[in-house]
Length: 250
Image (cartoon, rainbow, N blue to C red; front, side, top):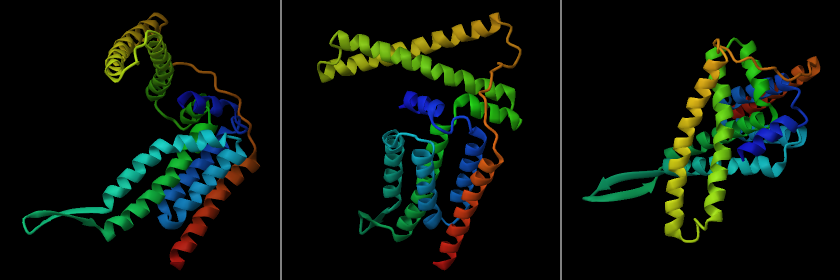
């Protein structure tokens, strides 16, 4: 999934318009966090999904599949808020909480909208582009270097994980549950050791190249269009106004 999202971020129709997309996503995030959640959550979720799938050309299956795991955590947390636990007559009483259910509904809708905005940004803005945006915003160079190194290490370790699992599978390391558990433990241990070795080699490589507190990265070309910035700002403002109107009407 990580590789698919990264590949989509570099190939979608909006990959050269990182500035307007970042402004659009930031506006949507402010809208879903500040506007009434019962209206803002569904509106922002729909706007981010439509913008990613229909606007940027992100494959719908990739976009919505990426929501499944976070949505599972979200539903589990919402269900926990709806349950109340108490003690009465010397026993444990389990029931439903109306206040908890209301809180779960508001929190869940707000979180769903924020999740859609996050995925829209991740699937449409390449890493080098949002790193360049952070550098223009004055983010510390040490933080940017750390983000870039971690980003690189994620793919290196993912390659190592695939190689280890492929080798174990070729040696019938998953033929039974007991053998599969043992193989998984060995793979985790090998991946941990390999991550330490890669980190040490990375540190040595940076020192050998005379690292001077900055890793120069050539930013990708960006298309600058005033109309795109205007539209990116207008849509979140319109959604916020609509959300407040619906919220006050309730």
